Image (cartoon, rainbow, N blue to C red; front, side, top):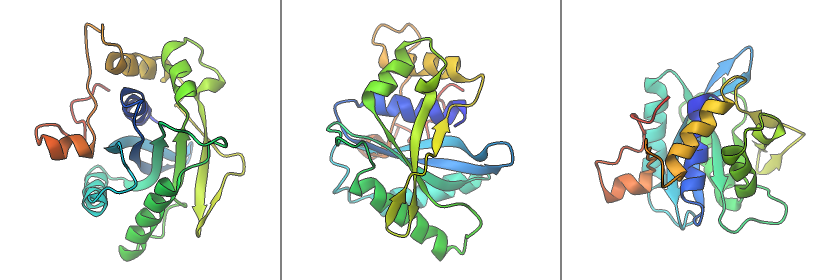
Amino acid sequence: MSKRAASVSIAHALDRCTDDVLGAFIVKDSKDHGILCVDAVPLFHGDTTTTAYLDIALEQCFTHARSIGGDVGGVYEARAMRGADGTPSATARGLCSAIEDARRRDGDGAHSKTFVIAYDGSTLERLARSEDDGASCAFATWTLDGTELDARGRVATVETGERKDVRELVRRVIDPSSSDKLEVFDFDDHLDDLSKDWRNATFAT
Protein backbone atom coordinates (compact mmCIF):
# COMPACT_ATOMS: atom_id res chain seq x y z
CA MET A 1 0.00 0.00 0.00
CA SER A 2 1.25 3.45 -0.89
CA LYS A 3 1.38 6.13 1.78
CA ARG A 4 -1.84 7.65 0.49
CA ALA A 5 -3.77 4.37 0.22
CA ALA A 6 -2.72 3.27 3.69
CA SER A 7 -3.26 6.60 5.44
CA VAL A 8 -6.68 7.32 3.91
CA SER A 9 -8.07 3.83 4.58
CA ILE A 10 -6.65 3.53 8.11
CA ALA A 11 -7.74 7.07 9.02
CA HIS A 12 -11.25 6.26 7.75
CA ALA A 13 -11.37 3.14 9.93
CA LEU A 14 -10.06 4.83 13.08
CA ASP A 15 -12.01 8.06 12.66
CA ARG A 16 -15.22 5.98 12.55
CA CYS A 17 -14.12 3.43 15.13
CA THR A 18 -17.62 2.98 16.58
CA ASP A 19 -19.09 2.21 13.14
CA ASP A 20 -18.60 -0.45 10.53
CA VAL A 21 -16.72 1.11 7.63
CA LEU A 22 -16.26 -0.01 4.05
CA GLY A 23 -14.03 1.28 1.29
CA ALA A 24 -12.27 0.38 -1.94
CA PHE A 25 -8.67 0.39 -3.12
CA ILE A 26 -7.47 1.74 -6.45
CA VAL A 27 -4.63 -0.42 -7.74
CA LYS A 28 -1.98 -0.55 -10.42
CA ASP A 29 0.12 -3.50 -11.50
CA SER A 30 3.71 -3.27 -10.32
CA LYS A 31 6.61 -5.57 -11.12
CA ASP A 32 8.21 -4.72 -7.78
CA HIS A 33 5.08 -4.94 -5.62
CA GLY A 34 2.80 -7.38 -7.44
CA ILE A 35 -0.27 -5.23 -6.91
CA LEU A 36 0.26 -1.69 -5.64
CA CYS A 37 -2.63 0.07 -3.89
CA VAL A 38 -2.16 3.68 -4.97
CA ASP A 39 -5.28 5.18 -3.40
CA ALA A 40 -8.21 4.38 -1.13
CA VAL A 41 -11.82 5.47 -1.58
CA PRO A 42 -13.80 5.60 1.67
CA LEU A 43 -17.34 4.49 0.84
CA PHE A 44 -19.68 3.97 3.78
CA HIS A 45 -19.96 3.95 7.55
CA GLY A 46 -22.65 2.73 9.91
CA ASP A 47 -25.11 0.21 8.49
CA THR A 48 -23.01 -0.88 5.50
CA THR A 49 -25.22 -3.91 4.84
CA THR A 50 -28.23 -1.99 3.52
CA THR A 51 -26.76 0.97 1.66
CA ALA A 52 -28.86 1.96 -1.32
CA TYR A 53 -26.00 3.74 -3.03
CA LEU A 54 -23.55 0.92 -3.76
CA ASP A 55 -24.02 0.92 -7.54
CA ILE A 56 -23.63 4.69 -7.75
CA ALA A 57 -20.58 4.65 -5.50
CA LEU A 58 -18.91 1.87 -7.49
CA GLU A 59 -19.53 3.64 -10.77
CA GLN A 60 -17.93 6.77 -9.35
CA CYS A 61 -14.99 4.71 -8.02
CA PHE A 62 -14.30 3.15 -11.40
CA THR A 63 -14.50 6.52 -13.15
CA HIS A 64 -12.09 8.05 -10.63
CA ALA A 65 -9.72 5.07 -10.84
CA ARG A 66 -9.49 5.26 -14.61
CA SER A 67 -8.91 9.01 -14.49
CA ILE A 68 -5.64 8.33 -12.63
CA GLY A 69 -4.66 5.31 -14.71
CA GLY A 70 -5.72 2.68 -12.20
CA ASP A 71 -8.46 0.16 -11.52
CA VAL A 72 -10.70 -0.70 -8.59
CA GLY A 73 -9.08 -3.87 -7.34
CA GLY A 74 -9.62 -4.25 -3.62
CA VAL A 75 -11.86 -3.72 -0.62
CA TYR A 76 -11.17 -2.76 2.97
CA GLU A 77 -13.43 -2.92 5.97
CA ALA A 78 -13.25 -2.36 9.70
CA ARG A 79 -16.05 -3.64 11.85
CA ALA A 80 -17.28 -2.13 15.08
CA MET A 81 -18.29 -5.63 16.21
CA ARG A 82 -15.54 -7.90 14.93
CA GLY A 83 -16.02 -11.61 14.39
CA ALA A 84 -13.80 -13.93 16.42
CA ASP A 85 -11.90 -15.15 13.37
CA GLY A 86 -11.37 -11.69 11.84
CA THR A 87 -12.38 -12.83 8.36
CA PRO A 88 -14.13 -10.43 5.97
CA SER A 89 -17.86 -9.98 6.39
CA ALA A 90 -20.56 -10.96 3.94
CA THR A 91 -20.85 -7.27 3.03
CA ALA A 92 -17.17 -7.08 2.04
CA ARG A 93 -17.52 -10.28 0.03
CA GLY A 94 -20.55 -8.83 -1.71
CA LEU A 95 -18.60 -5.69 -2.61
CA CYS A 96 -15.81 -7.87 -4.03
CA SER A 97 -18.34 -9.72 -6.18
CA ALA A 98 -19.83 -6.42 -7.37
CA ILE A 99 -16.36 -5.19 -8.38
CA GLU A 100 -15.61 -8.39 -10.28
CA ASP A 101 -19.01 -8.22 -12.02
CA ALA A 102 -18.24 -4.65 -13.09
CA ARG A 103 -14.87 -5.74 -14.46
CA ARG A 104 -16.47 -8.54 -16.44
CA ARG A 105 -19.03 -6.15 -17.90
CA ASP A 106 -16.19 -3.88 -18.97
CA GLY A 107 -14.22 -6.79 -20.42
CA ASP A 108 -11.32 -6.26 -18.02
CA GLY A 109 -9.67 -9.57 -17.25
CA ALA A 110 -6.12 -8.29 -17.00
CA HIS A 111 -5.86 -7.89 -13.24
CA SER A 112 -5.60 -10.37 -10.42
CA LYS A 113 -8.56 -11.38 -8.28
CA THR A 114 -10.25 -8.78 -6.11
CA PHE A 115 -8.90 -8.76 -2.55
CA VAL A 116 -10.13 -7.81 0.91
CA ILE A 117 -8.28 -6.39 3.88
CA ALA A 118 -10.30 -6.73 7.09
CA TYR A 119 -8.70 -4.17 9.39
CA ASP A 120 -8.61 -4.94 13.08
CA GLY A 121 -9.06 -1.90 15.29
CA SER A 122 -6.51 -2.89 17.91
CA THR A 123 -3.84 -3.47 15.26
CA LEU A 124 -4.61 -0.12 13.68
CA GLU A 125 -4.35 1.62 17.02
CA ARG A 126 -0.93 0.09 17.58
CA LEU A 127 0.17 1.19 14.12
CA ALA A 128 -1.09 4.73 14.62
CA ARG A 129 0.24 5.22 18.14
CA SER A 130 3.54 3.35 18.20
CA GLU A 131 6.88 4.03 16.54
CA ASP A 132 7.43 0.36 15.70
CA ASP A 133 7.99 -0.20 11.98
CA GLY A 134 7.75 -3.97 12.27
CA ALA A 135 5.00 -6.50 11.76
CA SER A 136 2.24 -4.14 12.88
CA CYS A 137 2.31 -2.73 9.34
CA ALA A 138 1.30 -6.08 7.79
CA PHE A 139 -2.35 -6.97 7.24
CA ALA A 140 -3.88 -10.33 6.36
CA THR A 141 -5.37 -10.23 2.87
CA TRP A 142 -7.98 -12.45 1.25
CA THR A 143 -8.81 -12.87 -2.42
CA LEU A 144 -12.17 -13.85 -3.83
CA ASP A 145 -12.17 -17.17 -5.70
CA GLY A 146 -15.66 -17.59 -7.07
CA THR A 147 -17.77 -17.23 -3.95
CA GLU A 148 -15.05 -18.35 -1.53
CA LEU A 149 -12.35 -16.34 0.21
CA ASP A 150 -8.79 -17.60 -0.05
CA ALA A 151 -6.05 -16.42 2.32
CA ARG A 152 -2.96 -18.59 1.65
CA GLY A 153 -0.77 -16.40 3.81
CA ARG A 154 -1.13 -13.29 1.68
CA VAL A 155 -0.37 -10.00 3.41
CA ALA A 156 -0.52 -6.34 2.48
CA THR A 157 2.14 -4.00 3.79
CA VAL A 158 2.77 -0.30 3.86
CA GLU A 159 5.54 0.63 1.45
CA THR A 160 9.01 0.59 2.97
CA GLY A 161 10.07 4.05 4.07
CA GLU A 162 6.50 5.37 4.22
CA ARG A 163 5.33 4.02 7.58
CA LYS A 164 6.31 7.02 9.68
CA ASP A 165 4.49 9.36 7.29
CA VAL A 166 1.39 7.14 7.39
CA ARG A 167 1.35 7.35 11.18
CA GLU A 168 1.69 11.11 11.13
CA LEU A 169 -1.18 11.53 8.66
CA VAL A 170 -3.45 9.18 10.60
CA ARG A 171 -2.69 10.96 13.86
CA ARG A 172 -3.66 14.29 12.28
CA VAL A 173 -7.11 12.80 11.61
CA ILE A 174 -7.78 11.01 14.90
CA ASP A 175 -6.02 13.27 17.42
CA PRO A 176 -8.51 15.97 18.60
CA SER A 177 -5.64 18.11 19.88
CA SER A 178 -3.79 18.14 16.56
CA SER A 179 -2.72 21.64 15.55
CA ASP A 180 -2.74 20.58 11.89
CA LYS A 181 -6.04 18.68 11.72
CA LEU A 182 -6.95 16.55 8.69
CA GLU A 183 -10.36 15.20 7.76
CA VAL A 184 -11.29 12.14 5.74
CA PHE A 185 -14.70 11.89 4.07
CA ASP A 186 -16.59 8.92 2.67
CA PHE A 187 -19.41 8.60 0.17
CA ASP A 188 -21.97 8.76 2.98
CA ASP A 189 -20.54 12.11 4.10
CA HIS A 190 -20.67 13.40 0.52
CA LEU A 191 -24.33 12.49 0.13
CA ASP A 192 -25.10 14.41 3.33
CA ASP A 193 -22.99 17.41 2.31
CA LEU A 194 -21.82 17.74 -1.29
CA SER A 195 -18.91 19.94 -0.24
CA LYS A 196 -17.28 16.92 1.42
CA ASP A 197 -15.16 15.29 -1.29
CA TRP A 198 -15.20 11.46 -1.08
CA ARG A 199 -12.05 11.41 -3.23
CA ASN A 200 -10.28 13.33 -0.43
CA ALA A 201 -8.36 15.27 -3.07
CA THR A 202 -6.92 17.68 -0.51
CA PHE A 203 -5.78 14.95 1.89
CA ALA A 204 -2.06 15.47 2.51
CA THR A 205 0.30 13.11 0.69
